[in-house]
Length: 255
Length: 233
Image (tube, rainbow over all chains, first blue to last red; front, top):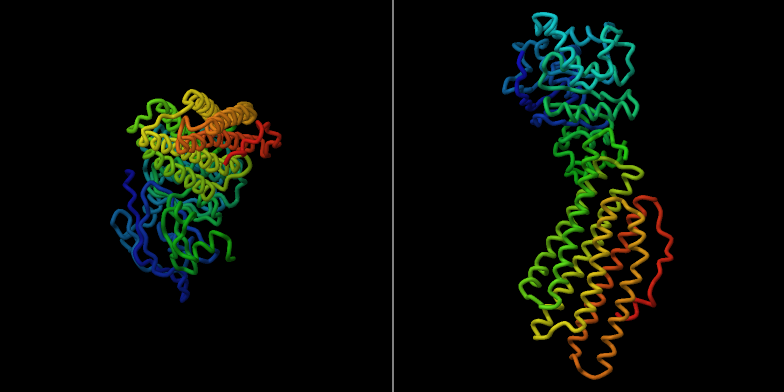
């Protein structure tokens, strides 16, 4: 699978959990090779929206997604699109790192193996090394690739999960509060990694930390009760937001 | 010096410091140029100085905007916070120095228009050169966070104050002794002298800002003053 360009947009996307409309007709174009932060209070729909981009809402029985999610002009929100292939192109990292109970090597090699990305072991070794290097983890694990991944620290496990997502050659990376479980230093290391990764990938990050959104994103989208309230340059959102509601949230004037 | 884990944060702080150095250079250039034409009162050069001041005003706003951006996006703390808070204050002091150089140019232009020359030109040039050297020193001290150099500037403002008092005494004596120079010319001289003296004051303000940036406290204000440099206003 080649690394395709990463034009991503949403048109009138709504998500229902049974009868409850959790996301209300959201449209936006994602900036390529940039970090976009989705921010907003709990229950505002930001994680629900994030999951639309790799059809992860499919695995929630009560969820129904309407509208179009366009990846390179193709609507992925149709039965024609293979969600497994999609989730290789649109990788995801979760709040709690979830390494497989396998070696560091096998965690990274798993995806390329099942997607047939490596015809023999040398290729696989190269993919593993390249992915770990891109995730900034190679130097710390190169001499112990056969160790259990679960023996790594929290920050290392999260970088492993990023490497695992990178290994199948995505063009988009979705990150759902990837640093929530990490200490400030581990968080800073991951943020620096994200800063570097955006040169290759389009990244969307859901975060509860406004300071994190301010630090690492170029665009920010503020959600409230399922509505996209404001979407713009991060610098503008955090110095002079257009909407009072946005100002209130980022200033901590509402809960 | 320790670097941040975020390289782009380091870049932002370095860029802010570089902007202060740039505006310092702009003011230095203006002052140097106005001193160079105190003798010949070259109208073209004087008008250029006056026009160029706008660039310094605009650049000061850029420094402010950059500091706001860093505060909004990085939430700096401790020494980082002091750096970001001090930079626009220093830029503002430098902008005022730029204004003073422009004001000197305006007064020199007025003399030229009245077909006069600047009396006591050697004294003015010497005092102006002291002020310029002070500005160069304080710009350098800022760029290197050199507190010792900043303190040296802070303590030696007394020399500019002393030159100011001598010059103003000469001006007043000239008026007392009859109209070798007309009152309008002497008025310009008094203001030019005051403007140069004020440049020294702003340099000491920058010295205090550098001190605070490094030590997180104010200089103990026992700065020596020559007489009362605020006498003539």
